[in-house]
Amino acid sequence: MSSRQRVETALAHRQPDRTPVDFLAVPEIWHQLVAHFGIEPAKPGDDQFFDPVWEAVLDKLDVDCRVISFDQFCAPPASAFAPKGRPEVWNVQSRSTPARMWRWKTDGFATDVFGRGFREVANASGVYEENIATLAGASTLAEVQAHTWPDPDWWDFSSAKSVVEALNRNGAKHIRFRMGTVFELAWQMRGMEKFLMELAGEPEIPVYMMERITDITIEVTKRALDAVGDAVDMVYFYDDLAANVSLLMSKKMWRTHIRPLHARLAEVAKSYGKKVMYHTDGAVRPLIPDLIEMGVDVLNPIQPGVTGMEPDGLKRDFGDRLAFHGGVDIVGLLPKGSPDDIRTAVKNLTRVLGTDGGYVLASSHHIQSDTPLANVLALYEIALR
Image 1 (cartoon, rainbow, N blue to C red):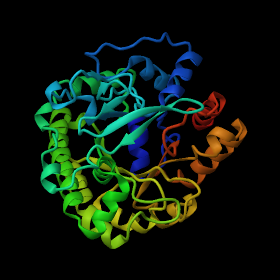
Image 2: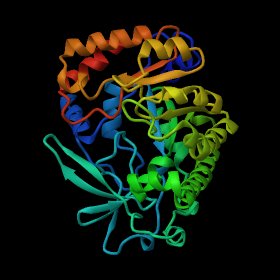
Image 3: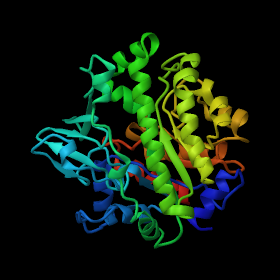
C-alpha cells in the first residue's frame, strides 16, 4: 500500500497493511532528528513552501501523512503590520511540520496573519511562544471591527498543487489542508478570561470575532481547495473546547455560539468531497455525538489521562462512526518513560484503536523539547515493525 492508500483504508474503517503514522514536533526535536539521520542541515529559500530537510526526516520515519496550511501561502502587505518589522516563515517556534508558517516579526514580538501576538520565552529545554492578547484593550465593538482583519486576497494558492506534487515525489502521501481555528484564535486575541466572561454575559464582541474569523477562513479554504482539487484528501481545523475533567463551557453555550461555526467549516470540506479532521484537547467526550452529526470523520488528539477519553471506551462507543488520530502521551510517557514503555503503549493503542482500522498513530500533541530522542525513535520503530 502507498501511504495515501494506507490512511484512506484506515479512515474507511478497514484494516490496512499496518497502522498508519503521523508526526508533529517542536523545532528542537526536528533538529535532533536531522542530526541523528545525518541529513545535511540547510535553510530553505524564501520562495519555497516547505523545508526539504524536515521533509527528509518524515521519509526516514516512514510517516504517512503530510500537511499543507493556510498560513503557508499568505503574503500580507507590510502596511497591515507594525513598522520596522519583517516577515519570517522559517524561524517560527510554533512550526511543527515542514510547512512554512508566516509571522511578522519585530524585536521580541511577532504577530500572525490575523494579528494575534506572540513573545518567545525560553524554558529549561527550549523555547515556546507565549500568547499576547492584542485585542484585550478594545472596549467597544467598533474598536474590534476596526482591527486590521486579513483580506482573503492576501493569499495566493497558485503554487499549492505543485507543492502537493513535490510532497508526493517519493510516493503518494495522505495530505490534509489545515484551515485554522475559530474559538481558540478569538480568545487568544481577546484574552481567555475576558472572552469567556463576555461570551456568557455580553457576547456581542466574542460572537463578532468568531463570525469574522469563520467568514475569512471559509473563503480562504474555498480558494485553497479550488486550487488543489483532488490532490488533498482531508481538511483539518482545531479548537480546544475542554480541560482535563470537563468542557470549558456548558454544552448549551457551545451549541449556541460555537457549533454553528464549526458546522459551517465542516460543510465547506464536505462540499468538496473531503473528510474532516478536528482537534480538541481535553475531556470532550460529551460533544462527540454532535461532532459526528456535524460531519467530523477523524478526532485528534485523544489526550491520555483525561475524563472520558479512554481509548477502549471511545473505540467501543464511537469506533464505527469516527476514526482517531494521536493518543501517545506527550506529558508523562514520552518525556519520562523508557523506550520499552513507549513500545508497550504503542502496541496497546494499535490493538485497541487500530483493530479493523479507524486509527492513525501519533503523539497526543506536538512532541515536546524535553523528550529523549530514543523515545521518539522507539515510537516509530515499533509502529513500523
